[in-house]
Length: 111
Image: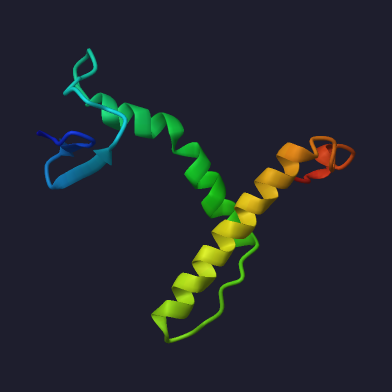
């Protein structure tokens, strides 16, 4: 099922009984489906193509995190924002300095 506004598209897709996938996109404007037996919406295919970056972010943030145990949810949110900001700063640093850590690349370092 699709829903549209001037700037966004919402899709609700049920791949299996009892499982519902809902995605919101500002890129897609038409209700397009893939050819084949499953007939997945193109919004879901585009998401699946680009979700590797999110997985990499989650992996890096879990390995190098600033989070601490706290009962206060604003502090948890602050720690999460700080983790993502630090990762983004690292990505920008590596983009500006591509030769950084090139000697350690084969030893398991980031590039």
